[in-house]
Amino acid sequence: MVLQRASTSKIKRMSSSTPSKPKPGHPANAIAPANKPSNFLRQIIEHDLAAGSYAQRKWGGSPGDAAHHAQGAPDPAKIRTRFPPEPNGYLHIGHAKSICINFGLARDYGGVCHLRFDDTNPEKEEQEYVNSIIDAVKWLGFDWNGSPTAAPYQASDYFDFMYRAAEALIEAGHAYVDEQTVEQIRINRGDFGKPGVDSPFRSRTPAENLARFREMRDGKHEDGAMVLRAKIDMASPNINLRDPAIYRIRRATHHNTGDKWCIYPMYTFAHPIEDALENITHSICTLEFEDQRPFYDWLLQRLIEAGLLSAPPPHQYEFARLNLSYVITSKRKLAQLVYDHKVKGWDDPRLPTLVGLRRRGYTPEAIQLFAERIGVTKSDSWIDYSTLEGCLRETLDGSAARAMAVLDPIKLVLSNWDAVMGKPEDSSQAAVGKLDDCSAPLHPHHPELGKRSFKIGKEVWIDRSDFEETPHKGFFRLFPGNKVRLKYGHVIECTGCTKDASGKILEVLATLIPDTKSGTPGSDAVKVKGVITWVGVSDGLPVEVRLYDRLFLDAQPDAGGKDFIESLNPNSLKVVTAFVEPSLASAKADQKFQFERHGYFVADRVDHAAGKPVFNLAVGLKDSWGK
Ligand code: ATP
Ligand code: MG
Image (cartoon, rainbow, N blue to C red; front, side):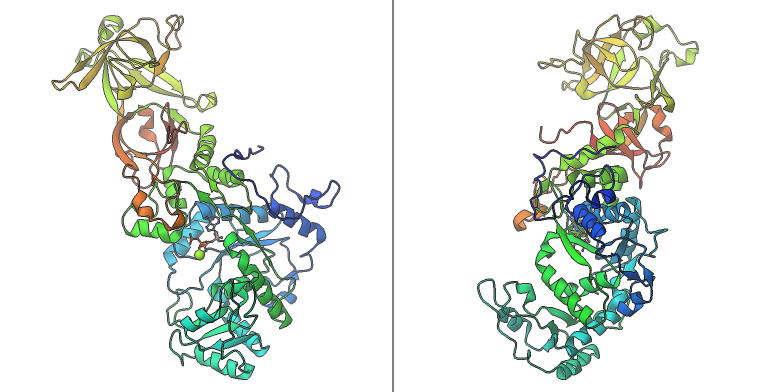
């Protein structure tokens, strides 16, 4: 299948200084996978493969330092990418983009993608999140089984090496212990218009620094009393190079290393080292890390010079993070919604978490299609939520079984039913009347999937909105004097309705037009403009349907520091009792259906049970938001 790109009006195209596309005949052309829209990352990788940039690397069988990899065999992975989540929450649709990019590139170019838990921050991480991340990556369709690398990895396994790297920097005069207060460090860093001021501790000797750093490690100093800083350039125009902190004192129990350490590496120090130990070739991250790249390169060069890491080092590339309208993609903010009970847990179908989307009815195929369609660019933009919904519709359309459902039921009574159809053979059924068998294909384009059966009788459920006593212009469904077809059934003519004392409509009345049943000879002799869906009163199944809508009313709920709680949509969930066809009695949790004329629904994976069916609205049939 050739994938269509999303419309350019919704997605700003990239503008970036990336390598130009290889010319015809260029060896990289032989490397490009067929049928994949190119992007700047693919071009970079194809260029690196053609140039053999990483062909000399060796792989020691597991992550490790230069000596470890040097005794290994040539790396069987042509490229190595990684997906490095911090296990401090559940993954969301933004992470899915990153997963699809990193695992997808590795798959397409004979490489390996490492799932790595970036767990260098001891306070926020939990095993529950680790497990949920593994589940999410596998559910999306990616795995590490059979790869030459056993994964997942955890950054905290590299703490010993990181400590060694820090000592090596100190010994080479590239790092020092700074005892200024946090405030002094901040002020002396300067700003965009003002160079920084050297710390009075900057000129200490390596021996003094080493002794101090070991005291930090040995718990001789209070949290925050001092930090280890890289010694680079306090006048650099890039503030990230003005002697960034690389180790801090923090007495906290780590979920992996327990109380072994009271000093922890800073993210900017840890991350490049994690990449290098794992032989990563292309370290792909979001744009906000662009300014960190010079430090990434500086650090790895110093550690290669020190003989600790093997060359060539990994290289960092940045892409635009996913911003999706009406959606929040920040684990921290999603956690706030969960813990403040604004939603019913991490897997609430209104959340953009992968567990939430899954429960909503999203499939891995839909999310992969979405990732492919939005592409990879280097300029920030907002993707319209309807792009994601469109991908779900497209992937469910070919597979979801069809069924009729009435979401807002009102009874339709066919007053001449007995006269036309005759009395039931079994006199005990007189009140119900005679029932007539109807059938429909499970899927209109897949007759091989078979048929579904249901019965029509003198009473059927129809949707309240399919009747208008005084029709508005262009309304072709039920109103007194108008004929419509009951889908897969007969043509009927509306005769009116009954009301209670307050004027509320109780029942809609109609007469059956004989000899018009779908599929029988001459059934289309009576022409109608409207066809309505319905469910028999005799065999309709009452079910709970959860109608979900956008969680926020504001398209950019947290942009510019806005309080996203204020734009929560009070009507994001409406629960109704609906009637559905009897074929749905055997629906299994997680099974998806198209309720004809309504949309795609999924049997709720948590609450749906044989005697207590629950369906979630996954997505409507048409993009009707805001219309
Ligand atoms: P959050 O704010 O949700 O915690 P994060 O970037 O801090 O996001 P990490 O767990 O550190 O979350 O992210 C793991 C990977 O997923 C990173 O490589 C990050 O760049 C990527 N990622 C996170 N959010 C998005 C997004 N919205 N679009 C694309 N990639 C993302
Ligand atoms: Mg993070």
